[in-house]
Image (cartoon, rainbow, N blue to C red; front, side, top):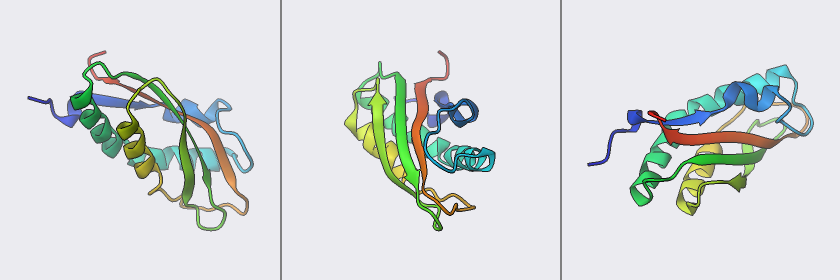
Length: 128
């Protein structure tokens, strides 16, 4: 029997991901970093579900996935999301995570493109 989603954790390195110079590109001031982090928090549960499903394929699946994406000016839509690198050899997990990121919209769009070059996600069971 597969444990429920709340037994797993996707450690979204939300606070440090952008605040420690991991966000590259233009328009990455404090308000943008906070907006990106807040939006990423909204998909923590769906991403945890992606991870739970991936664990049914490989119980030993753990590690970090680095995302990159850009935020469209004026609309605030997260676009061109891709996996820059991953320690998790599961293409289905990558597709699922990217689908969730692609649904996001920054509430206060910027006048220029915002490029997020490095956004780390760490995947592991809660008990580790």
